[in-house]
Image (cartoon, rainbow, N blue to C red; front, side, top):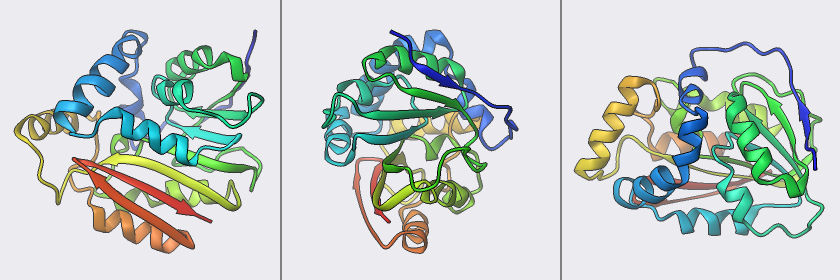
Length: 228
């Protein structure tokens, strides 16, 4: 079974490239164990099962997934329709290939693209858009500098659609010793860009771009839901 693949020439900027580059084929093979198992439980203090439940609550059968990682949540969440239309967007072709293969039963469409640029997708064509563990991987002085992500995605949502996601906040929360050390290393290496990302700044963006929103925090992780 083949999946559709779409590609385009894109501008690789310093804002997006470092966080995406780490996802080699080897890293993707251990991603579920290290990030979703070890890191979520002991560092970020946010069990992966809560993120999976979050997906189940908000995903639709007309879905766009940005920053797909290993595809764990798409593989394990409960779609309403076996013929769901799923579009995958990532800057890293390894992540796209890994995830598309993992969920090949849905015949996803894959697009290599930079989320800091407008995406070549039809406006108002998705009922749900997910940006799970994406924002903290994007470079920027703070989360306000990543506002363009929400502008670009809002265009793609149908009226009444939902954008949902999670992000690891770097400031304003109580991080344990392991989280502080790992986050510091990740920010130095450019894997993360979240040193100054705060709950308040995230809320400012959501208020500006959506008619309704919800935010709650588990451990170091902010869960947000935005309705157009």
